[in-house]
Image 1 (cartoon, rainbow, N blue to C red):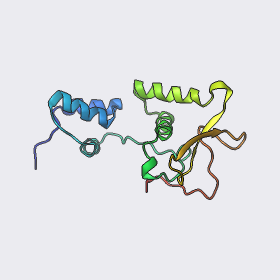
Image 2 (cartoon, rainbow, N blue to C red):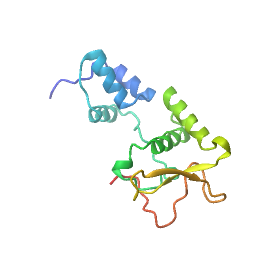
Image 3 (tube, rainbow, N blue to C red):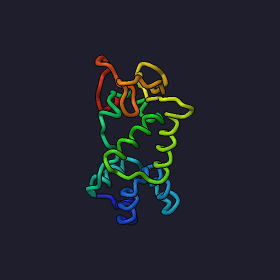
Amino acid sequence: MPASKIQNVDEARRWILEGQTYAWIIEQYRNKYNIETTEGMWTNFRRRQGLPGRRVRNADLVPWRVKVEHSAHYYLQMLRFRARELAGTSLNEREEHRVRTFERSLTADGQDLVVHYDRETKAGFFLVPRRPGVDKSWIREPDSTVERGKSYD
């Protein structure tokens, strides 16, 4: 079995529990230890250490089956952050700032906007006016013909 690239298990655990992104951890390892790591390596480390998963599933905030090409969209990230908040998972300072800024943008200038997803479009995600009495939370409630799911395709 090859030697582990993990230089300090306690440090790595702390970073993950603090909510640092894998990209941030990869950059820290590159700068601090001159070691190249991958997101997959950190995912495996997290799992082996019994640390909680990164994604919080919330079918009320992300009810759609999202295409891979839309999986990194800013609006989807904000919905994931909100899902983590609602699940009681703390956000790091940057994530907290981003989600609060996004939340304010939904009601800026007297608007009342929600996130809409259309997997058949290039952009995928859009902000649209809330339908009073229909749209809850931060999303446009999908109709019954929308494919629901938690995985990407």
